[in-house]
Image (tube, rainbow, N blue to C red; front, side, top):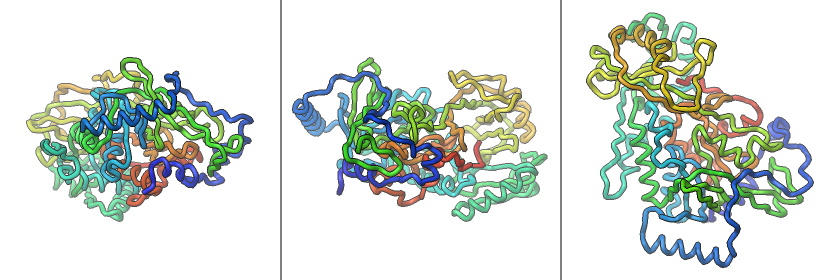
Amino acid sequence: MLSLSARAGRLVARQLHTTAAVRRAAGADEQPPPTPTEPIRRERAPPPEDPFQRAARIFSDDMRFLWEGKKSRTFFPSHCDVCIIGGGIMGSAIAFWLKLRAGPGVQVVVVERDSTYRTASTPLSVGGLRQQFSLPENIQMSMFSAQFLRNADRFLTVEGDEPPAIQFHPHGYLMCASPEKAELLEQNYRTQMENGAKMELMTPARLKERFPWINTDGVALACHGQENEGWFDPHALLSAFRRKAIQLGAEFVEGEAAGFESRYVPNMQSMGKQSVAGGNYVLDRAVIRLKNGDVKTVKAAIFVASAGANTAQVARLAGIGEGEGLLATPVPVEPRKRYVYFYHSPDGPGLDCPLLIDPSGAYFRREGHGGHYIGGKSPTGTADDPEPSADNLDVDYDYFQSHVWHHLAHRVHSFENLKVKSAWAGYYDYNTLDQNAIIGPHPHHHNLFMATGFSGHGIQQAPAVGRAITEHILDGEYRTIDLTRMGFERVLANQPLYEQNIV
């Protein structure tokens, strides 16, 4: 079995060649710079160690780690095979799959800036799971995730601990379409059914028969998920992935990416990447700033940027969006703030209530028992419904009254007297190009993978994305679900791959 360093070399040499059209769009045919320099933003790291001292220290660290039998090092690891920047649901899922498949043969380090996950997207999400997408890739990923969640006890239970309490509620999504959107809903329904999802297309009469509490005014057609749709506890899933990855041998360190160091490799040619004085640069180390202010480096063969809404910032540290040619195009992902309101309506829908998406974009689902619900709505970005500032996670309670409540009360008349009890806000890692995920290696930095831009549906696809990234790293290709269309090449070529069902 090849080492990860050897696999990284093969990635640089053969993977993800960029087509001529994409290279022209990205300006990749420009002349190489006259000197072998590569702009990489980074903080000042400690001076390099003597190579013999470094080798002795690494050996000593590894022996102490194995001798003590610890689940996680108490000191900063200086090297690994795969370094994952961002330890939320996506990074933890990738670490889990890498360690599950490769075991001790692949050393994985996950860098997470806040181990409490206080402002992370996953714990602040609604935790929905659906197959009602317009793209086959998204449908297939969520179908696999549903199977994974149903078997979470088998996959994610840590030896000696209780099984994770994912609390999956399989009550489905109910997508309601206006007359203008009915044809699109039916097209999506056909795509979902062709990909193995089980849906029921509902006329207004059938909708009223199935859910008597719904007001069908303005609804021309609806689609209800019959299985593998619903919601779950997002924080429980994140915790389970992280704990299981650690048990399998992944190391989580608390710190923030501050830059990258690159290494010049002479006599190396790579498709889609201009040579520099006969060779090329590859990313070699991540520079990490710890909470106490110390700056460390970790050497790796493969890097993964899975920092959610902050992934574009991590990419800039590697020169993506600040260079020329393939480095000229930034990662089109930014934080978008979304509000979630927790309210009480004692006469609202009962236990069979699905997660309902109104034609207006407003949504709600049951939260526990006793007439409690959560709901919200994504802004349209128009003048009368602009995007809120993403500088903080403050909640605008007036937004519920002005843009959410009247839609909910129109669809469910018992919500006319609801009472908002609390609320919170979280971030989408919003892909401004096409509201769809960016998954796979970067065309310039072949040993830098990305998993970002999910625009609100990342948590439900994390099990599938973690498996896919692992396949690409270990096998050099996708083996189960082909996610090639979700690569960065479409960003370079400015060819959006639109997902029509964004909530």
